[in-house]
Image (cartoon, rainbow, N blue to C red; front, top):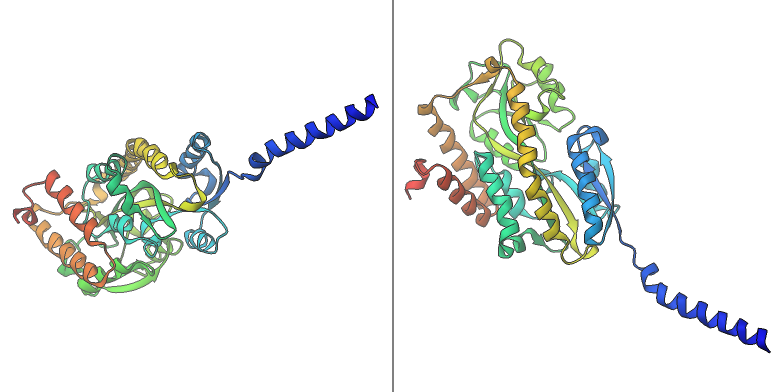
Length: 336
């Protein structure tokens, strides 16, 4: 009898223990991130994402970073439900939420400080952060990639009018850039991040646009040669953005993640400025102050046109104008 009671007691203990453990075992905290980095696992962005994944353990999730060197594939895998989050350029993620992706608007944020202030605002003001969520998607991180510059094979093209008739490699999914190319009378040559460099270097196009960190990896110096150059007037600020299906994450994950990336902003800015500084001084094409209003007018026209088409978010455009005027009150648009 004694052994029978002991056996029954052990069974009861096992059942009780299993019932207590069941909720913990049923809760799967692992999440998969489809992350684009041109250099794959060897890239600076991937290394920062690994730091992010370690921090996420304290927020209740184990993140598995899946590296992609092809951005389109990463975005398609996210859309197909093969991952819980995606890291891709803002322009690639436009269809999910226009508010955060409008950060990359043509001429929207000329200075890194402007973008940094915006990133910090999403941490400081919950009302602003609410706009980062749309339907089942939420933007939980904005990573600066650098100012996008116009890169030319002929450095004598330094006015808006001289762009007319020129062939410009344009990301075929980037509606704003298509409108800008059309606005200046240039010829759009469809490209993606994989073909942009070869088209420019081989002379298939007269110009392309890209941030400084890809100048060396894409070997754009080959296309620039001795006759070309980079117009030192930013067209836009390129970003990588982290988009998640928020129902797959804890309620405070978005806020914690945005705070993490806000703290990393200055580190990423330093990497970008270092890449800009490594480009030889004689490659840069300075635009005289008297010609800058022509570019600003073109940018403003394109932004208005894209707002009317619904490609840009009006609230974000207003926010960015306030940031521009705060940084540079002398701008003509700030008189109103």
